[in-house]
Amino acid sequence: MKEYAAFYEKQTAFLKRLKNPAKVLSITYKVLTIAVAAIYLAGLIIAAFGVFGSPLPTLFSLLLPPAVAVIVVTLLRMAIPRKRPYEEEGGGITPLVKKERKSNSFPSRHTACAFVIGVTLCSVALWLGLPVLALGALLAYVRFLCGFHYPTDLIGGALIGATFGVAAFFLPLLFI
Image 1 (cartoon, rainbow, N blue to C red):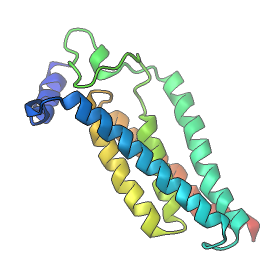
Image 2: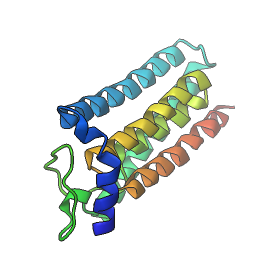
Image 3: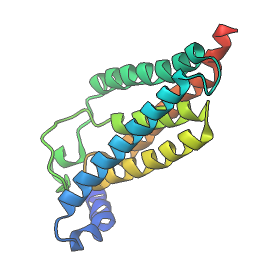
């Protein structure tokens, strides 16, 4: 655990030179989360108008994978009560952003959501999905910098989200 604390300190050293790194990080992860949601909503609205093909199958393929992914991630978090980095005894980190929430670190729900939305949107429009994937990667890194997750929490969330997102490429076939 001491190695992780040293790694975290090294990764966050540049932020500690800022006047208020906690505020910068808090605002950043909130803005990134809102940006992902806004792009997703825009994609849903565009799909409802039939721009990507028949609206019903398209909306079904854009809504179902994220919904299922959120449920699966939530169940995994209950089944795997992994402590957050700042909760570890004898070597936990001092996070840059204070958070009261305990446990439920693995997998990262924010990251899983961003990646399932990004891959799902890629199934209909790369120009919508790729920016969400980039925002999702940045969101994951910011949540690490905040001290909320271990890198493995974030990688797990990204892999789960991307895996469920791939379903969006195949769901429209059910309507053929």
